[in-house]
Image (tube, helix red, strand yellow):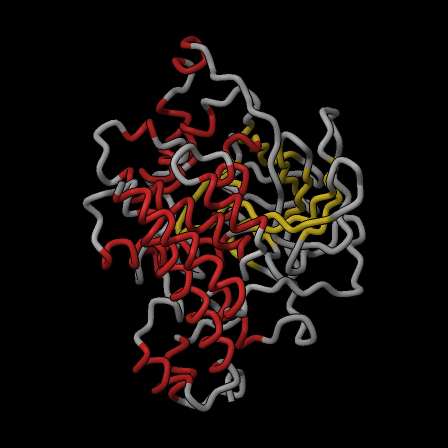
Length: 388
């Protein structure tokens, strides 16, 4: 009975949010059209027709994002035994990334070039690199099946809270795209912390490779900041209003997800749920990709968000040396021009254009400023022209 009452409370809160809140995460398109091998912008608007055929998706406005594909079969024991530890070591010495690669390679359609490695980046954290062999122009770096990606379908079909997420989508709750993805992974993360058998969580190996809390792998975001810190550092800056809008949207999602998660993770208290939802929103804001999806009848087009394992290891650069191809069942990453031995691989997550997204919004949205190595706190304290 208590679980039913909490779920009803969540539905009431959701309906109130629908009528009173304004979502922060509005995707902005532009008239820019992606040419072959061009840099990405904020969204990859790929026309995705939900058909069973193998279809390449054509980018209209480039950027972060892809939808879902068909489920793949589970590899047989012989395939699993073929995963040699030496092959994983060749890719990376990072244990969390080795675990991620091993999980990805359990899927029969995964391909990860032996030339691809994960190392510490000079830009901070980790990055993708070529090995001592390098890549030729157009050479395949990796292929990741959509079954490994975290998608809105994972949220909508979830047996514990899928009905709630479906209602959020039907009611068009503000920023419901981010709510679906963030709420789902927050719930999965909290469950995984209580399970001895982590394999029950489909994306557990991926979740281990991404930062959930502030300062983990250099992660920082205004979502993690106290209100006092926001007022002190951002109060008179260009980023202030956007930071407040993002924080308000996340606070609303936290109130909502508490009612959804508590019946599922009964021993989770308010503080733990709040931390998980904040971490999930930071992950989805800084790492998720969005795709324009066309319905079966072609009458409507919607935006879907997804998390793409391995691709999000790459650092951002406005003129990248890789290009992304999106298909129904998988994504491909290819070399964009010849890549030298030991060269770092880059992907353009958001085109650096002030008319699309100014630099101060790079920080409030993604948690970093492209091309700037100085600490953001220092920039704010020194009244940098980026913010003032």
